Image (cartoon, rainbow, N blue to C red; front, side):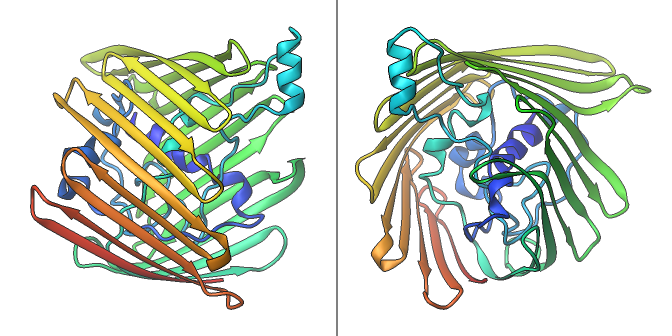
Length: 386
């Protein structure tokens, strides 16, 4: 299920980016270079898709935000949330206190997202990105990446946003795609079918061969969200994976849910379940996931308008390892400066610095990570224009 979960972390940003995306720089390094913590971050509860899916195309260095997955975000396009961690308004709070309807809890896979956004993304090499808006609905990007550890090359990305507006920063349909210099294509289509139903189709090709594809269907009720994902189905071989999510608001602050992952391939069949609980306070979000694959707990706290901190704990029964990470984000709007830092129990220390050079449409980014145990160091530098 790796490609599904990773892809969902990118989908969380797909809808609002074309209306005004925030240019971030991310240059990924293999998780093995940074030790078990990075490996654990690439796992989720009930992760079994890796055993059923073909080997995905090699992720492009710096291609998109977050860990590379089924569909890479085209260079130059970040993926703002399709639906952020629910923030209970005063009116919703009053309704909840009065015994009226509860707020929608959002989606299952974004429950840990608020904490993860505080942590810096790994960077390596040099990256130049040029973004260009051709119209109110269409936007393109060009990215050149130079790396000593990953693949160097060129990527062309496009984003189209339709005219069906469902919110202040949400318009549909959304078509996002990118292609590298070898001809490998990543693409996804997201559309709001009705006020409550949203669908998504994603695919990945490696040169001229299909590697992965998946179809999602999500339904949002008044106080719950349910979703079903079908990944890499093959009727002739009898293989594929089905993931079902359900998240229910119990109170205005508490949401409970679960996940069921079923996978099948010749000679192998199995299912994994996990349970999730999330509590949202005025300035914090605490989330816990428990299942057969281990445990995952996150705590996000917003100290003030400038400082946000997060703590993440992961225990994997498969890896027989645990990792605790601490991250923080310091935002200085007057200086157009964003700083993120992290340190974990495996003695991996990292930080990124992003500086906007206003009034020029130019953003500079620097990043460095050091693994003390393996004595490994990596750094990156990026320039974003537009």
